[in-house]
Image 1 (cartoon, one colour):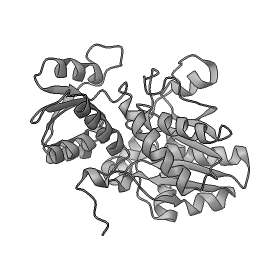
Image 2 (cartoon, rainbow, N blue to C red):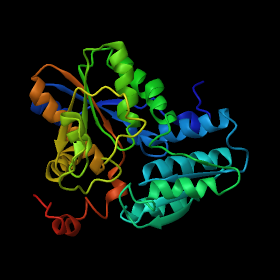
Image 3 (spheres, rainbow, N blue to C red):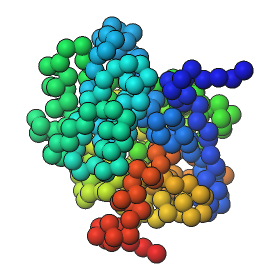
Length: 324
């Protein structure tokens, strides 16, 4: 019998999918981890599980306690699911710029949701800093602190990286992914580099983020902006510190949206905007490296969380992103 132990036992071990249209276009094997098939619907289920179980092992949270986090959505959704499964309460501080679908989903899952104005990280009222202060003032509560809690990248070092290695029989030539907290990119990079130092590890970065500039020049410089949610950063998080990065590729919104629609119309995959950044960067990297290489990236979450935005013609038109 092969029976999973509840929600928690279902996290991880996602399929690795060949993206046929992009593989044929580039002559490379463009492969992607189907993280949208995690039980909470995104790659963030892995980090959420490891963060809560790490707190349990350390005795930081007791039965009936509260998990507090500042999140742009998917980590909150993962945390809310796992809190329900483990008997904790969940409090989410979210920027009011995030999609209504994510806020509705969090409330439907039983989380308390507090939208706050979106302000830069340096502002004391930034949603991440605010969530930390709120958690510190509560009894029997932990701050998940996904950006700087190394349990995040450990989740991917211990699960996602080994899964990719096994699923490709160790034939992976390059790994490319965007970073928000940096946990997915860093954990997988660190594992793959240990297995084979020749594997190229590349950050995919949207406009409006400073990571591309940091990897290219050593300085954080921000240009432009992006409609994508939950990725990009204006600082190096603890999860990203020390992570191997051979290069970075910057992707603009038009390219990301084109890729999202190609994934839907040619590959049958209904994906969100961060996946558009990831796959566009994988295609750009394939063209740099030339045919015959195996490149792995992440399908972060489903497009259903962005229907009012990137799958809405009027919204796309308002952003100057409507293309046939």
